[in-house]
Amino acid sequence: MFSPMFKAAVDSAMSQPVADDRTRLLLGAMRGGTDSEVFFVFPLLFPRRIIDGAQNAHVCVAEISSSMDNGKEYLATAPAEQEDFPHVHAKKIRSDTVRLITCLDQYYANGQLRFPSPQSN
Image 1 (cartoon, rainbow, N blue to C red):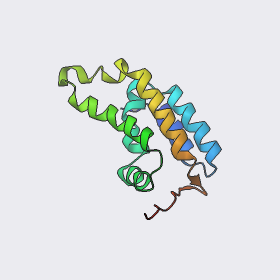
Image 2 (tube, rainbow, N blue to C red):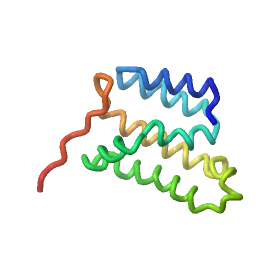
Image 3 (cartoon, rainbow, N blue to C red):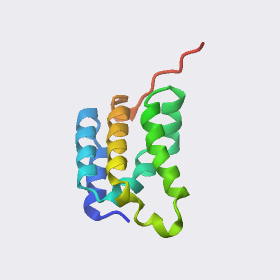
Image 4 (tube, rainbow, N blue to C red):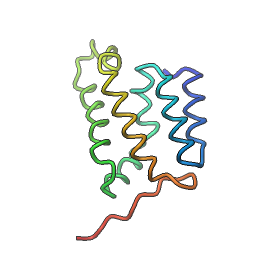
């Protein structure tokens, strides 16, 4: 599913301890990836624990929602049309992915994502 070049680019980006380097390389990997690679890498870049952590901290909520909506729309698409889904919706998927990477990476420090503690009301 992922080309060796895309996998190497993502792995290199994810290994960066400095947020700016990580973001720059990850965005470069997304630019160089195929429409399918960019779409299907979402759960690998952002596993459930990261999404849940961000939502619990009330950060990047709109960006997460947009990216999650892409997955929901894919699952609601007729099976015969799913293969073309990443290409047909490439512009939105790529934009949403860039926005989510940029948003979440502002919480990246010392090799880890660190979200603010949720505020008590």
